[in-house]
Image (cartoon, rainbow, N blue to C red; front, side, top):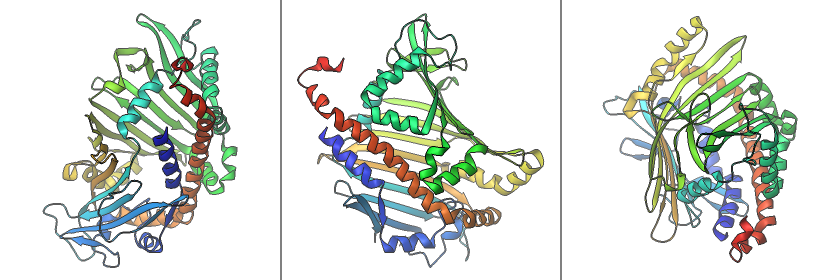
Length: 444
């Protein structure tokens, strides 16, 4: 509990970042986050950016530490990683791929890497995985007939599940209900192997609840009515482990639990294979497939086949997640427009997916000998220079950047509301949790 409480304090500080004047100056010199990597190839030769140069690698380095209720972040003279708990080290690096020749104004392509490291004295990814595994044992309604006959009907199973959740986390439940109107929570079926649960949350976002965040509310009202996105996590046989998405104001998430363990399921939402005890898993591979569409002028635009192969490994001290883009994304657009879009962005996306080994992201935690936990995260890919994309990115930045900082700040304020709701419920239950050490029967 002491470790959790230290982590919650640090988590709150990360939602209150404060930038030093030197970091603000650097951020003003580089493209906004919406297009930083699209414009990376033209950034590499720039002499007005205060790069730290190591041979052909150009780096921007930052460091952060807690300061009161905030996390204070400033420019660092080197990208040395932290050695003390609750210290942040971050870096943005560009380097030319092998065999690429530099020109005076740009590079044909660059390898861009964005990474960070932080130390804590709390817990690593292993404890988080174990917590999720334990939470799965609590994902059910009442596991009693009458059973559901099809997914998606809100009934006594959903009411039982929400009642149990509300009993433990009433403030979090109130907060969720403030922003979402529940259409479904879960479905319970009886099968040859016994009852099983389809966690099948469907909620409608309540836009009026966002009005206290005016810039975020305006952004949501502009984008949400036209946006559809879906993501599936599948195995080698194209069975599903999780499905989630957003459809013009409706949010959904689906996964299956059998005997308190995560289970794969087919397109008809029937269980497949043996369930998996996440806490015992040491290696795993799956794929994540994502599609994003926005409907404008009676036409759909977007990207399809955003596909990554995900690798998981765990040993006594280290837990790692690694993802690699495994195919070239496809442009979604009407036929005539799609040809133009592929001409503009096609080579950029092929380079992203295949250049220098393809886009890769990694996150890991490692328990160190001094009792601290080292968290690392990194995203790396090759980004091709595209004058047309550069122009479009600049145009987009001129429109979005005016309110971008305010939207990000209000996103953090929204996240802070949910964190504070959890902390309130945790504090209310604190004495009861402590009593579990004396009387385990209280867990029933």
